[in-house]
Image 1: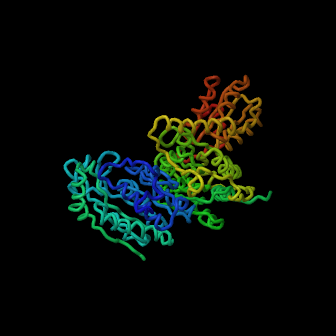
Image 2 (image 1 turned 135 degrees about the vertical axis):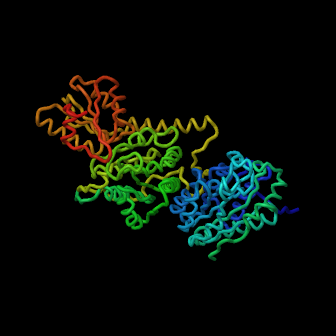
Image 3 (image 1 turned 180 degrees about the horizontal axis):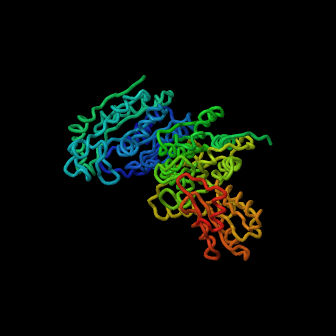
Length: 248
Length: 352
């Protein structure tokens, strides 16, 4: 009887266990990157990734392509250096909200404004995961964190930053979409967005970013199913999904 | 060889291109602006990349990326901007990434002044950023020497996989002198970098990284950095001795002050005083063995260190002399450059 493979590990992913917590979807997003590049015919010799500081700091251990590990927030600058030296390679940075929207905000904004031809995968879980659940620039009003223990209070902590909306005001960036990964339908939409972002890069269009809403059950102090509900009830209301910029 | 009259900063920029630099990122700051200005026009002519970054922090991380990708890369700045680059320099050192960094030092601390200074010495040679690492640091004293050092710095950086810092000062950057420019190198002839991020093909995955949670592995990385530095110490320390053979007073100075000191030596020699100059060219590694050898000589009565600082390199001289002879110091700050008469007066005891 002939066997037909219907599901396998993408060639761009290492065959190793991931360190991510139960209920976190970093692993799914890693897989979406690997799957979409494979579907676009991009093999490991044609892609170089940049890992952040944060929960995905070990991403270089999970992808099979050449990888750089950047200083906190500096992935867009490191990716700029790599892409300008190797304009024929697909270059992506993979960054969390503290990395991208706080300490690395300048690097993010200016890479987008320069319309650098690489793709940013922006993981927004509205908290600092790796360091143990501190308030992020994206933490919702009222949301608990270890540095906003009574809930984020705008009088004390100001307001969260809508990164996709903000960057979409720039002329430079070509494609910006916010997606979620809390259920299968949204994962499929996230995959479409990530594929489109890489497609734009392959076409030489310029800067693309996909903001991915991700649950952090560990630091939200919720069970994974409660965290999914929190994304539906709270996070998606504050951070609406959709295409924020598409210059076509 | 034909000589051309060039401003220090522009001569350094041209020497970098001829030495194979094909990527530059930097942010405006006086007195080094002619380097990025020149390269913004020059690098595209040779297929290279110039980026005016949004900050010095971003620039040094672009260098991290470009160097990781295998390209000869350079950034330049001046004191306050070099402070901002220290995070990136620590990462570049730990990642064993070759690159060249120019610091046209200005007076400080703080915003300081745009006039020359030498008070970034500690930052350059004792670390600057966090953690255990060392840079290879050169101190050019003339525009020609700045050209020669810049040209060579890319080879040294690649050979040892270490960031090379060229510690200039506002005078070196701004003055014009006749220079002979070296020939243009062809980057396609440079040795292949098998560690670089070039796209994984027929080889294991390359990772440029500065993180290791395994204490044994991180210690091994740190040991390797210092093994390399030791090789440089054995093979590549550079200095100049001027009229030191029978000197009773040995002036120790680098960069622009060494030129003033050379004039002082000439004037004092003309009056029959036995004065010499020891000029470190590398200050990291420091030429401490050569200074120790001078300290052993019976004719040498004392060392006299002069810097545009409150006394930084003088500590390395004291370590090298190790109590064998007195070590005296005269320095100016605030953007003042010491002149010959002033230095002679200080050496002769009128001013300490």
